[in-house]
Length: 155
Image (cartoon, rainbow, N blue to C red):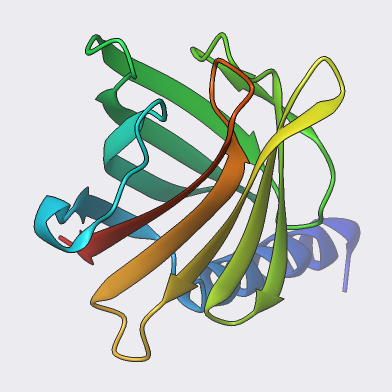
């Protein structure tokens, strides 16, 4: 085979692997907050919509919601589930986020500001893939320790 054929074969195989990996990610899709089932601590923002999309060999996470001050919030993060820090845009309380995959349905998310961990969240997708629970531990704007549980339904 010539170089073009080898290159074309490589591109097709890489694309197929990327699609298979994305298809196996239980978090991909749009998640809406179920406020009735959630127990969100005072002083923490409320993410009402969370969208996970494939972005090449990474994942893009878009969060929309309401801050502790009642104002609308929007932030974005693009990275891999490799536990490394990637930048966050749109949220002044965090400048880096890392996500580590624990198993096929569980992620551990760590938010940092100026290199210091501000919160850790455990994200668990239900076995049926229709809902997920996010348990957050961290500190609020006043430095108080808080725990919060948010339940989301897949759209």
